[in-house]
Image 1 (tube, rainbow, N blue to C red):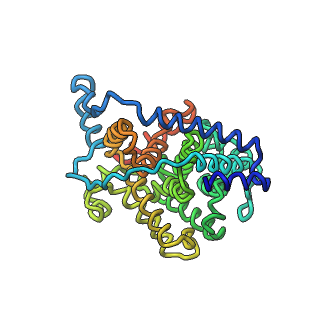
Image 2: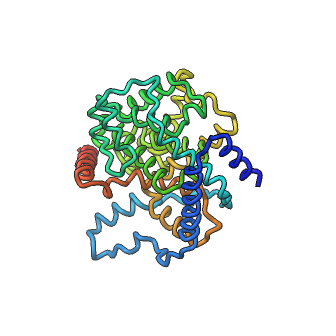
Image 3: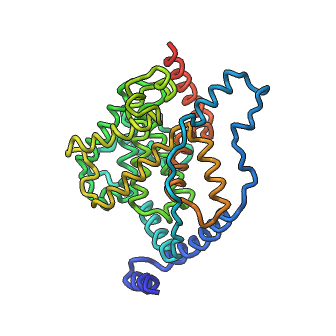
Length: 363
């Protein structure tokens, strides 16, 4: 009742119009109905998809590659105990709805970063599944990640909320771009990072999940997407393991690349205060943020793919047992491998780039 009275007071002060309130109440009802339906439906097929590939349907070499790439062959991974989710109140949904609507009505805050007109034009489609990151990269002079990252932090009002110094933000994302360009990868480069970050934004926006996330969780998702392949070597985890690379030795053959992406990105923040965009987070917020980012990026390891699918199917059969960090991890993983579901011209270009990268690995 206290929150409802608070909303009434906001309405009386003119902070929220009647139309806004009505619209968001209707939306909240729709969200709640959708959540109930989605969380209580039962999925009958919980079998491991890899087991469906019969030995006579594909060559043995392909089966071996699938097994080495999409399954974990390294012992038992530690599992965190399940946390029971909190079901947010209708009032929270209404407030979040009003916040999101206002956020997207607001024009982009360009203070601190100059947006060329071509970049402004390319970013007009940032809320769409058909967003063309290649066009943005051309318009920005190979700085697609910088503009995507800055634009999204601005749109979600995270720069203000977490008191992120603009100079630190620009320095950090430019350092990310340097790291993504280190090995001149055809696929795992700054454009891929920008594409995944924009796709995460699309999923947050279009699924309605923004209404159930805190600002810190949204920040963690965008950050995780931006760094998830930082300093990627252009080779697979299995390549590192088989060649006994220094990175594989360092991380004991466990999610070799993903551990490096995380460690190297956080090292940037720690080594140079002038690019530490987390400097004004409280100790508790920093710990929660780091924990979420680590879980999300580690979950992009392709050997976890079928394990994640099975876990999510099982979770949907238990309406009260959904683990939010696992759901966020699945969203990032989905964005990471989403280009086959994009427009053909985008998918074809990504596929050719990935094939080129695979070819380079064996030459």
